[in-house]
Length: 253
Image (tube, rainbow, N blue to C red; front, top):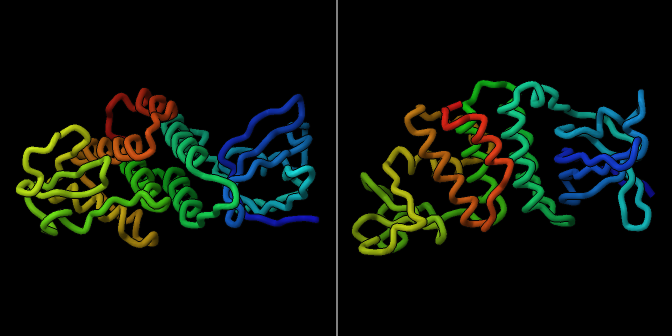
C-alpha cells in the first residue's frame, strides 16, 4: 500500500554508503522518518528530493512500521539556502526548533506553511535575518498553543501605554501600575513600537505576517525578546542558535 504526502525535509542523515534517513514535516502526518534507499548513488532517481529543504509530494510505502521512499515529485527545492552561511545557519535553527516540537500524527499545516514562507524569504534575501528570526520564533510558539496573551494588561486590560511589561514565563502583559514590585527576572520592557511588532507577529493573519518591517534600532531588542520567550517556554537552549549568533556577532542582518 502506498501513501502520498506533501512534506518538507528538515534533516537528512546518512546510513551506510548509499542510504539516508529523512525527517520530513508533512501536511497530514506531522513529522515522519523516511528511509531513502540508494539515494547517495550517482544518478540516483530520488537524490534531489532526499536533501534538506526540499518540499515535494512523496510517495511512500510502509514496512514494519517504517516509511520507505518510493518516488517523489519536487514542488520547491530551496537550493539558495546553502549558498549563504548565515541564512543556512538560521534555517538550521528553524529546523532544530521544529524537530524538537513536532510529533507524528499531529499535523499542523500552519507550522509547515510558516517554515515554507520563512525559507522563501530567506532565499529572496529582501528581509533582515533578525526580523525573520523573530517572526519565526514567536509565530511558531503561537501556532503550537503557546501564544502569549497580548490583548492588554492582564489585570486592568489597558491596551497600551508608553511602557508595558511582558512576563515571558506567564506569557502576559502588565502595565506599570499593575506590575507593582514583582520580580523583573524573566520580564521584558516594551515600548509601544515593540508591543506593536509582537502583536503583529503573534496575532495577524498568516497572509500578512511577513509584511512587517522594523527599523534596525528595534531589531536587536525584538530578536532578544522572541528568543528568550522561546527558550523560557520550551525550557531548552538550541545549539544552532549559538552557531547563527557566532556568525552574526551581534550585527543586524
